[in-house]
Image (cartoon, rainbow, N blue to C red; front, side, top):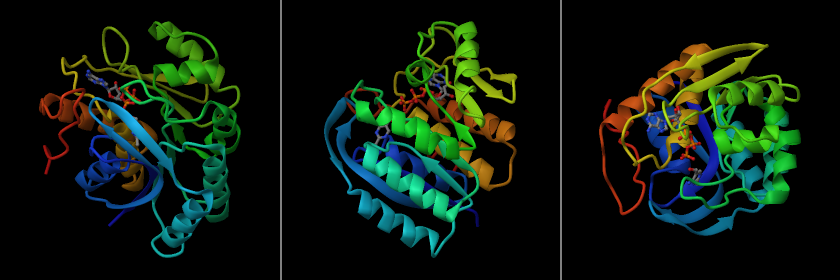
Length: 259
Ligand SMILES: Nc1ncnc2c1ncn2[C@@H]1O[C@H](COP(=O)(O)OP(=O)(O)OP(=O)(O)O)[C@@H](O)[C@H]1O
Ligand SMILES: Cc1ncc(CO)c(N)n1
């Protein structure tokens, strides 16, 4: 059994964060573990509160996982504050796991801040360099590259700019583009598009969390980065097509459809 660790925030409504990650990891028949960085009080309509875990307790959780059941891949999502980011980076350098996927979560689907403004530089300088793959959405990529992204050409320019400081795989997700849901992979100066028609479903709460934990699961299973992204995109597309409709806002995905 391959083991996948998610380091992320909890979403009590079960659609994003740790809960989405564990459901995704299990749907890939891997063993899921979680290090919780923050508790959020949220649902399909918004985020109503955040309680950060102390940096020491994040380290304590990471020690417990890494000294006992060493993961084959690690997904990192909401990291909340400078202290937590530094704690995670320190422990990752100590244990040196393979297949680190970072979803640089900054804002929730419902528009609430999940990363403190002053923590962006620490995320960029201390954590992102440790990743094999990063998966910014359009607004996160805009913050990382410093200009607006409105088209596929802009996505390509943004990836090139981000690659000047980060040398791993950059996947810019196009889920928020007007037309298709096309994602761009940039690595070693080369690009590859993962193309998909946009599904007419507003229940997209947790798509980013799901994609990144699916990529981590596929990497743990031994697939290449490109295969892992394609498999994960297929997984998301299938889950969106199920048309689950829960809650009063942007509802979660159906993770049961392949089980
Ligand atoms: N309506 C849709 N139809 C098809 N694919 C979609 C749709 N919305 C998002 N996706 C896909 O889902 C994945 C996640 O992308 P998205 O841009 O939504 O991430 P995100 O904004 O980080 O997610 P989150 O809303 O969880 O923060 C991408 O592969 C994207 O192309
Ligand atoms: C805990 C958590 N992580 C990530 C997201 C991004 O969708 C969210 N809404 N909540």
